[in-house]
Image (cartoon, rainbow, N blue to C red; front, side, top):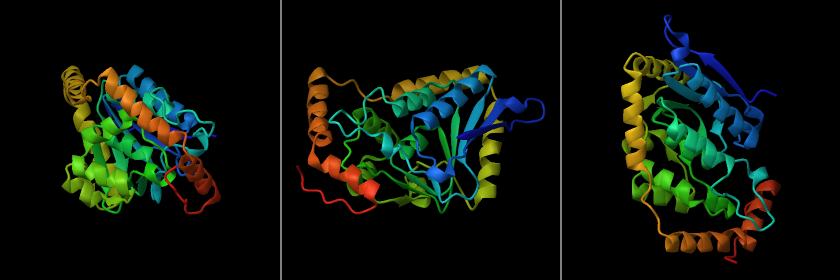
Length: 266
């Protein structure tokens, strides 16, 4: 089964200068399991090898859910860390941040959980006004990893990041635009497609080595501060308390059984 499609949408002189990658696993709401993340990562690598200067990630037109986030079916329930630093999502997001060209997210529908980190890691976001974003690990009892929290803190105002994490409630694309997170707010799918493609072509028309250097500088300057060994030990201990708890097991069971979880704080 094809999880993505790839097409070149650059100008007539160099169609491959702008690549559009579309997630096509609508039956699973584009959940980001290992196969999907591998396909997305491979698309980035292939685009770079082909001389891409800008890349657009999107879902199929008209979706109600852009992506449901990290595939819950792949979260462990054996007492091990559910979101290690080496999980496939972290590897993919690292590839997005380190790619030599700007990456654009073209968004419609709902963006949930780890998919928010995906979108907010992209360099530019074009979103339909009816799109929404929700960071949902607290609904499942999942302790988000420190790298992921750092990524989201670099994209969002601190108080907004706290509200999203602590409530798991969605915010609208209009609200995200007012916080400076969404670059372009558009009316519908057609305008989203046109705007994202035009942004990609504009970027591709400029000096790629200068843009590559500037993106590298921005990535380095917005990386999280260095944490001490004591910081890592304390944060890992807090996360371990959560991922080994009964609440974590309850959250995963409730999701699978399509019911509201009953968290007891133990």
